Length: 454
Image 1 (cartoon, helix red, strand yellow):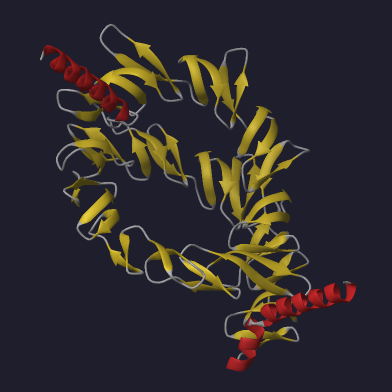
Image 2 (cartoon, one colour):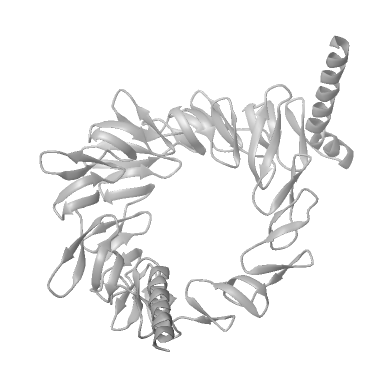
């Protein structure tokens, strides 16, 4: 009998050990309560990766270092820009956008929009949407809607939803087309791939059934959107706040701010992102802080803040100063202070004067311009570039090379000898199918050549 009891006791210890390993990072297993609990008593701080008990950390996430006292294990932050350190003031490895200073083992920021550099003056690699100016070794912005480029006026690869015509990016004419290309031979833009929720039929993006995220070429739904389940080929609503379910009464995953109880989603306490019950919060939402067992909102335009309501991270178009968030100013997308803008919004250009770096609007209808704001490099849709100025295309023309040479008309019109003419059903059907007809002709020509040779 004693051998049997010993056997089951060993099994119990093994299962308990396995359960502790199943707790997610940042939490520990409490054997008395048979549950996982967060490492920190303050959900606003989540720097501990592995712990043995509450406030006793064994291993920290990157950008922190473990520090043990006689009573607890802590995670101390490395210096700004440091990915790993052996002491809070001695860095070993820097984050992208920073370079290592050997003399004091610290990390200093690269120039704005630079991912990899030797020092603050010599950038080696720029962030997406920027190119490296070899002369100045700094990163400058690509043209509007451009992903990679060689300079500020010549794009190599456009963002999704746009196509490259020459050196500029233009929006795909087919609504809901994610990837399209322009043919110089027939001057037709064809769609290759649609956005999720649509499928491709003869160069057109056709919507999948309602609430369907992915469907096959025949339009039959294969995967429902979050919050719906597939039932006989149709997508049916899950219950409120449920992201994934197998039926209306069986939820598998709740949205943040809710907890799964008996197959249904129940609300967490106010401003709480993750909770263990409807009254016990484990993690506050990003724009709130933990205070006296509840989550309180951070100050205006603040994404995250400390217990004493000091902001640590601001929203876009705002900069951090003494725990508060302040506007970067008109036309500025990102800055560290009000006098020096790092990234301007589309339609603006960086201008430097004795006061600092600020954003000045380009001339009217200009999407990208030179430093003088008057010399335009790329125009907004519906305008064409002429002597560095943006002039309007003809009426109902979406893209044109010059005033009397429209390349693409607005919906309901077609190009006829460089101008846009209103459609009738027959003409528009012919225009929309032109690319398909050319593809078929090309296939037959290839077969004809093949038969003549062989």
